[in-house]
Image 1 (cartoon, one colour):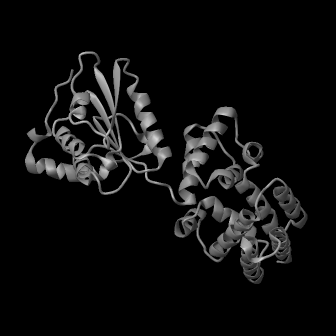
Image 2: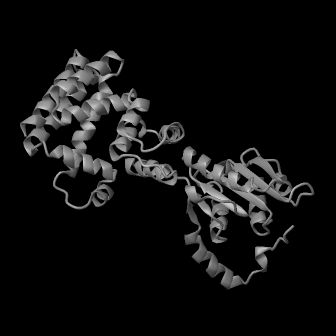
Image 3: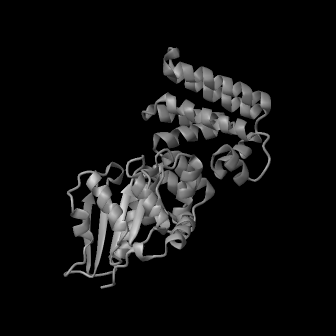
Length: 348
């Protein structure tokens, strides 16, 4: 059993200076999470919190004598943290997982701050804080001490979600075609938990290169994917294909509203990308979209001119109003929109 060393025994001003320097180095991406005497998982993106914790637990379980203890900081019994982190006669290592730090009780806050002054090196203490001001003093103390803080903040932009998916495939050493990733984002990109589950399923159930046809086989029936297929065909000027896809979508229960939204999204992205120079990564960063969206918009724009694009955006506005109650026949409104957009693309 290693000897516990109190942080209070370190040099005063030197320790403070080192703490300031280490605070900047303590932020760790979720996919590099690993056991440490104290680990803070910060953020409320449940997928990233779970994945970070799973990595820590999996690594810690390499010790066959590991004892796992779970605590809830919001419904906390005084003394529980001290008991959980105390040296054990039955195991050489402990993993203590603490939920609800963002809603922690005063007893927990007091005991956690005291524990940071005298950390047990044979314990891995994982604190999960979903955000907010509660427990701020504890968070500052963790940061000042240089303990790792795992970034699990919510991914809001499509670019971040697309990067997440791509990196998951990269870590698994599996290649996914750009068009396949595009299709996967169209089908599942609205929700990170669904996207993560989709990535995991493709990795587990398939072998070799992940193609667009493979993604379509698994997720082509999704409402989002159906809407994007219609939008892709319409913006590319393929009238017959766009109308066929639209009628199939309507017959299988897809509401006209998300189809209009998909067309609107593509046209808005094209309008934003139009006339902006630079690499896809540079433009994506400026517009806060994914690089693949820039590439796709630039390809789509080859079949369009400024006047046609402007008229199509006005047509979308009319159709959007019609399918949301402003018209008598939503299906007719979306059919009319698809036809107008496809013909505008062909006009050039």
